Image (cartoon, rainbow, N blue to C red; front, side):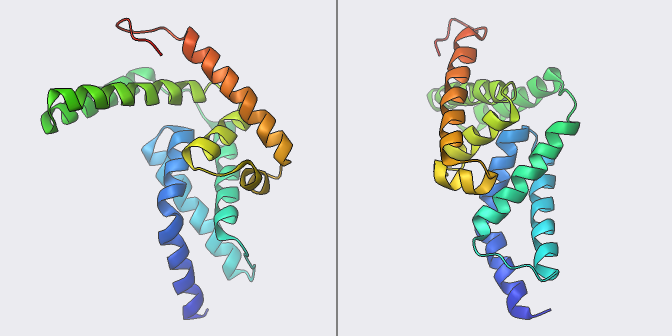
Length: 183
């Protein structure tokens, strides 16, 4: 194995690791599972390269692997306990309160609460809708890039995005509102 291949792969790893992790985290809502999926993505990519495969666009290639791994994860995913999520959130809020002022913390908590609501509702979307919304609005990919990574046409991606946004808005507006908050 050539040293230059390893060095190039390490550069790709450094460049795309954070984005892949963020994508996985938003899709599976578990830090540990997101770390595992990100690691598995790079292992599969490395195995492909070691086997003689060539990659023209690493970003699309890595996200395609991640996309497939997440679909596999959805297929075997079990229901996650809301109590566990609640305890984790409470600990995070306590840490925020210890670090910042009340006003900053309240603003951060409000933003975080909205993100949590959206993330919870994302899990209620079909995997196809969840995937395109995450790739578009979390990862910042264009519909054309998403179509290249998923194998769907650009038109199909745009339609899925549109339908997913409508469903998310409906779910968020009908979700129980705590403390008279408006969404």
